[in-house]
Length: 253
Image 1 (tube, rainbow, N blue to C red):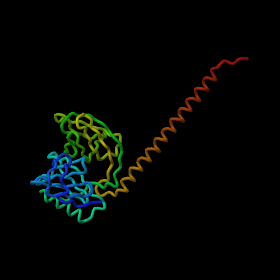
Image 2 (tube, one colour; image 1 turned 45 degrees about the vertical axis):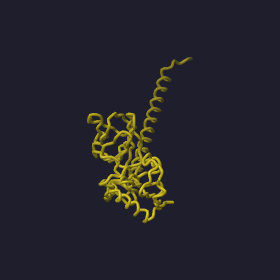
Image 3 (spheres, rainbow, N blue to C red; image 1 turned 120 degrees about the horizontal axis):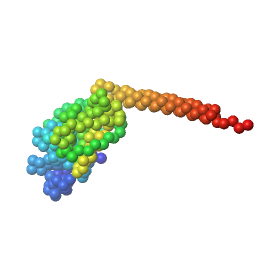
Image 4 (cartoon, rainbow, N blue to C red; image 1 turned 90 degrees about the vertical axis):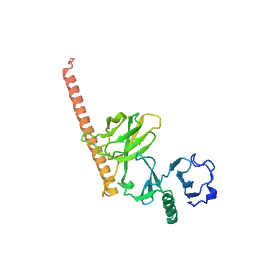
């Protein structure tokens, strides 16, 4: 159950920030908390994540979802309030953000999560401090993750930049890929690409999934037909070979 906590209850260390200091304000909606003291504000989710709320930062909002900037490079953290959050809790959350100096701006989601189809994973390596997705210009730091739309070229590649701005390319096994989530290790070189197909703007989510299912079914039928044809050809070759062997065998009187 969500609740609004009083200032007296906000004296614990939240994600390593605060160290037993008494916060001037604390807002709590489920595990989401906003704390302020001496002009400094921080948003935390449980004990796992903390994000300073910088004055003047633009927080993009779409319904119950908010994108909080975590750096100056364009990386964001998405906060989705619980479906049962009340209007009072939503207003309190907005007021806490505005009280920290953040600017709420409307944000139109580029796709509906209802129509998203997860296709699979691809892997790369890069030691660059930031990986740049060419299609969107978004930068992904080590240890960060970000989602972006991509457009595969005629050969099925999307492009990104690694160390020293060198252009790299990745070819997903799924031609329907039009969105990827790039996830990077904190201390290693591994880059994981989560490949998705998402509805295009104006396309109904059900239609997007139906299109994927239809293409998969057609590919399965085509694959089965090719296998049947190869099997038939192999049987014919085997039959001809056996007939040739029988004809060449000596006849014993």
